[in-house]
Image 1 (cartoon, rainbow, N blue to C red):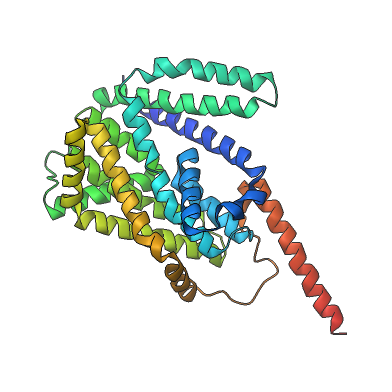
Image 2 (image 1 turned 90 degrees about the vertical axis):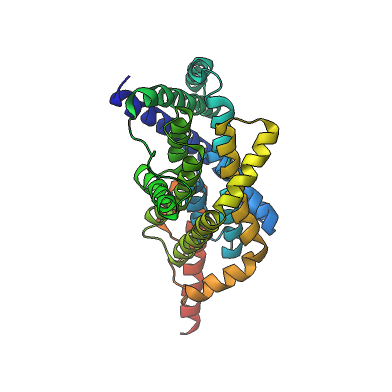
Length: 354
């Protein structure tokens, strides 16, 4: 085992995430236009939709960027989109539970390597089962990558946070900043979470240090979303600002209440006799749910305030054509249709003037 194996493990994990995300996006796009508004009618259903999308894609960043596309194409209002962004926090917690329950309790590579072979066989058989096959391949690669990371981490990783006591504010800020930086560099909080859980499983970090790292990693997704939305219209900037405020608030609340939240999590885990990986997954879920319960009841007032900070200007014929939506064919087609309608209305008004 060496550095090459560690890098390869990250690559295998990332490849699996990309395959899973792309396949699910293509599957979702077929009936997206018909069902999206119905699923996001109320704040609870909108938050549930955001959580479900994140759980499926295993990336809150992907969910947020897709939400930007939905708003830009006119498929969702900004207020509806805000509930999806808030709910995406809860969906991102599923990654920790999957890894804690499966990734380190069994030899996951031996268990799921056949899944990759079966998936590729389905991929080659025909179109009807092609996407199911690619889902199986993506899922298999994710856990093969986790298994590779686990072995490589024991032999390669020599850094230690031994001097960073999690009970002093300065060291807590250093751990939060390290977690945020990990997400920005890796462009995924999920990868940062897996690396942190691997470090915890190999006794590289303590549970308290791991909790602060994942708290910082969650906040780092705001910078990733901001980078991914570059070139977008006003709607994109509003959602990016909302994402930053939500995740920044979660970071601040989680840090200020860290001793209390950490103590509650440990108390619950002690009663259930859970190991440290399950405790970290529970902490990860707790502060994400805290963010949902903090912002969802006030989402309408929050939405109105954001609209005041970044107001809409006069309509433009190209206001639906956000470059970020090109990744989803169904959304791109709907944006083009709405843009043509705007052009038709504009031309009709011009003709009526003569």
